[in-house]
Each structure stands twice: as structure tokens, then as C-alpha cells.
Image (cartoon, rainbow, N blue to C red):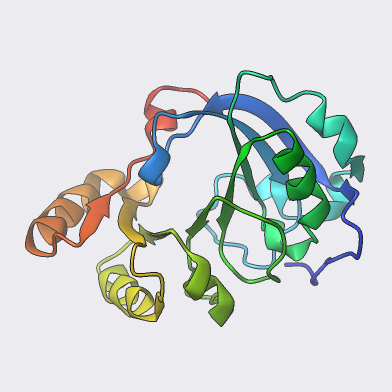
Length: 208
């Protein structure tokens, strides 16, 4: 766990990694995207598959302008993820990406502050650290990770907080429990068709 690391200018961020890959989850599954993973997290899910992103001290501050130089011109979508990217001021990063005419997506648990200019926000709330109310207003996509049966009730409660009427609702099996939970999710979605199923297809494809 870490404190809120929000800075005023956001010109330097503790970037853990940045890379070209395919979006593996949610609404934009299959879309070629450039990922910027920012270190530091205040949630700390025990099933997180990038625990090495939690401690921002492990990832030295990197100039945002340097990161931007690596984004291929032909790639339209940039996904900002973590860790928890909302711990930081994202105004400078997203402003520069807009100058490059990129579509900017945010993957967040919604626990930090609202900053930046995004075309798509995927909100993935966690039980141990709930989102701030502003993210329920902004979410284009609500993605709830299902590890056990109680997560269905949690998902419905979270969906009740969403204020964007066009928000897509997704249930995604926690990877280590996928064989057990996927059949339950299928059954649930068949009975509650407002929900869609998200799978971590990048893991099946063995890509980052």
C-alpha cells in the first residue's frame, strides 16, 4: 500500500513499463494498443498479477516526453494502467497524447484523484478500497473481477452507483479461479443480460 502520490505537474511519472500489445479485456478486447503502466498502488489485491507495480520506489521517475517518443505513429489507442494511475496528475500525459491525436483509455480502481482527459474509462472497483464517487460518474465500462459467489452481489451494488447510462457492465473471472467461476458467470449473464463477460484473452494468447 502507498500514500497518494499526486503531483502538481505530472511531467515525471514512475513508469514500470510501456509496450505495444493487444488489449485483452473488456469492451476493447482485440484492439492493438500502446500500454503505459505506472507504478504505485493503494489497493493491493492479493490476486493481482502485477504486484511488482505496487511500490513506486521500484520504478524511477521517467520523463513523460521520453515515453511518448516510443509510441508508434500508426497506433491510435494508448492505455494508461497500473498499479493505480490515478495516484498521479495525468493532465500533462493526456494533454500530450491528445496533441498526438491518440485515443486515451484509463484502467483504474478509481481510488485516487480525477485528472486527465480520457476517451474511455474502465473502472474496476475493489472491495477493500472503493472508488471515489466521481469515477462512478465518468466510467464508460465497469469491470468486476469475480473470485467467489459473493462477488455477484458486489457487482450489482457497484453497478447501482454508476451514473453514466451508457456504461458497459462486465464480469471477469479471476484468473486462478477461472475454471470454477466461468461457468457461474455464464449462468449469471444468461439470467442477467445487462452484464457481459470479459476474459483475459491476452493470457490465453500468451502476450503481455
